[in-house]
Length: 192
Image 1 (cartoon, rainbow, N blue to C red):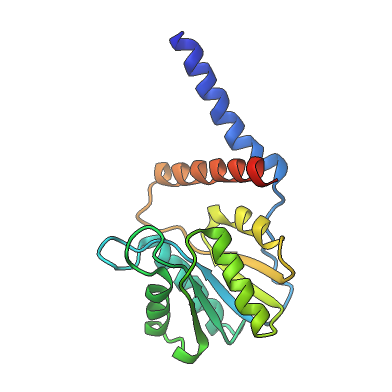
Image 2 (cartoon, rainbow, N blue to C red):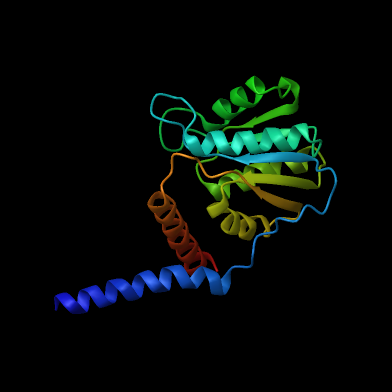
């Protein structure tokens, strides 16, 4: 019986990690435009003390780099207080300002609690401003799911992956990719 459970567990691991490869298109990472209406930073939880987490830091650093390279005049920081009492968007906005982005270039979207609501709420901001394009920044393991969700909206987009935090071990990264593959498999089965 124990061997059967191990075999079932291994088959589940294989399924969870192969399914996204079969049914998700590669993320759109080629920059087709020289300038986008906005850069969107998809939120990630802050640390319990309210400081930016390593993943959040890397996402903001990448967005600031793209902003300073002239890819947009605007940045939407997206993310509410999803996993603790600290607002992701506010922390990211303050960090971007500290890195030299003008306050007037930043829009805070602080209602989102997950990736879908990040994208939906940013899309609403984009529509209200009569914008049509976005350059979306997230972590490398999050690109494929983000691209899938963005493709559901009438917007021209490209994605850029941030750096992987230096303090992450190969095992940490493997676990993150596994969790992301699990989430993509679950979403594809539940939402097609």
